[in-house]
Image (tube, rainbow, N blue to C red):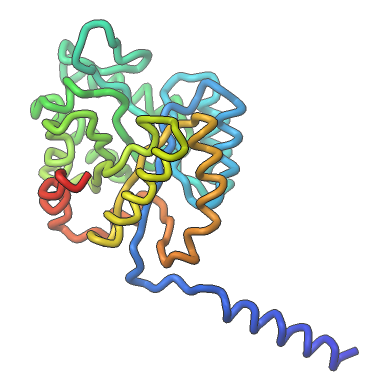
Length: 262
C-alpha cells in the first residue's frame, strides 16, 4: 500500500513539473469587465471567469453590494466604474456621474457616495468621460481626492486620445495605468479574438497591457474559452494593482508613444 502511494505521489509530482511555468518576467495582462451592477446573470458569469478578472461596477446599481462582497471571495478586484461626462448632451453620464458643472466640493461628495455604494473597492476606472477626462482641472481634483484616500489605484479607460487623466494621476501620485485594448467594440467573435491577440502582442512588447471588455454573451463566452489556455502561452493574468506595481515609472510616456500600435 505504501509502495503504491509513493508511486502515485511520484506521478502527481511529475505531472506538476510538466506544467508550463510562468516566469517572473513573463508578459502580464489585466482584464477589466465594465458596466457591471444591473444584470445578475452577467455578474455571476463574470465572477465565475478563470483568474483575477477586475469587476468594474457602476455606482448605486442593484447588484453593487452583491458584486463588491462576492468578487474578493473569488480572487477578483472590485473597481468603481466612475461615470464622467462624455461629449454630447444626448449622452448623460448617469447616476453618480460627475460633469463640468460640478464644483470641487460637489465632485468630492459624489465620489465619496459612489465609493460608499460598493464594498471593497480597490481602484477606479472611467465610464464614458470623453469630455471630462480632457479637462486638467477636474482631473486634478479627482486625483487629489483619490490620493487622499491612499489605497486606490486609477485606470484611464481612454475613451478619447485627448485624455489627461493618467497624467494627472501621475502628477498627484496616484498609482495608475491605462486601457490599451477594447476587446469588444465589435461582438463578432473573430474581432474579439483579434483584439485579444493584440492585447497579448502589446504585453509581449511592453511587458504588460490592459484590456477592457463588457459582460456581453460573446465576450464572456470567448473569455471562458481562452483564459484557461493563457498559462500555456507564457502570459500571466494578474490583478490590475499587481500590473501597476510591475510597470516602470516611465510606462506612462511609453504607452502614449505607442498609440499607433493600438
